[in-house]
Length: 337
Image 1 (cartoon, rainbow, N blue to C red):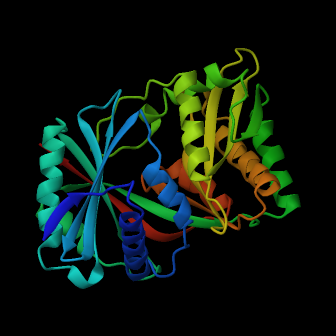
Image 2 (cartoon, rainbow, N blue to C red):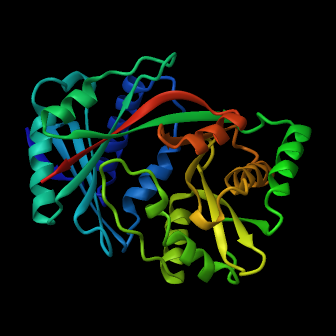
C-alpha cells in the first residue's frame, strides 16, 4: 500500500476520491441524504487561508482504498486538529486504516497538534443500523469518547403557518427587549462588526466534552472570506440573530448552511445565546425565524439537519418543538498527546 497526498489539481484523482466517498456513504449510511458531490469537488479546490488542510490517500495498485483528512486552524487553537479516516468497505479489517492512522498522527506531530478530535456514527435508539467499528477503531488507537451527540432531522414544513405564528408570538412575548434580524448569504455591512463580536464568543458557549478550544478571533475581513469560500462551494447560508434593543449588541444566533441542489437539505451550524441574555426564549425565536427565512429563499430544501450534544437539554427541547427526530448518534473522540 502507498499513501500519497491527494492532488486536487488532478481531475482524475478527484474523480477517484469522490467515487470512494460515494461508496463509503452508500455502505455506512445507505438511507442518508445524498449531498451535492460537485460542491464537495469545489470545496477540495478552494483555499481557505484561515485553515490548513492535509488530505492523503491510500492506494493498492491502481485502486484508491482509503484516505485521511486533517484540518488545522491557523490563527487560534494551534494545539488542536480535526481529523477523519475512511476506508473502502471491501478493504476494511486488513490494516489499511491503522496504516493511515499512523501516517495521520505523524502529520499531526509535525504540526505540533497535541489534541486530536475525530467523529464516528453510532446507532440511535430506534434508528437505522450503524456499525460500531468506527468507535472500536478509534479506541484501539488511544482515543477516548468525549461527547455523544444526537444527529436529528426535521421536515422544513413540520410547522404549519398557524403553529409557527403561535410559537413565534409566544417566544417574542418573553423577548420584548430584543428584535430578530435575518439575512441570506451576505452579512449586512451595518451588522458585520457586531456579528464578528458575537461569533468570537461562540466556542466558549458550546458543550465540548473533554475538548479544550479557545474562541475564534473573528473580524469583518475573516467573515467576508468565509462568505467567498461558501460561494465557491455553491453553498448558501440563512442567518438569524437577536439584537438587544437598548445596547444594539447581537446576543443570539443560528446559522443554517444550505446545500446546493439537487441536495434538498440544510444543516444547522451553531445556535447559541449569550449567558446574560438567556431565559427570554431567544434560541427558539431565532430558529423559528430562520426556518421561515429558509422556506422563503430556498424552496428546494425539504429537510433540516442538526447535531446536538445529548447534554444540551435546552436546545434538544427546542428541536423537539420544531419536529426534529434522531436518526443516528455522532460520537466525538479525542486523543491527547
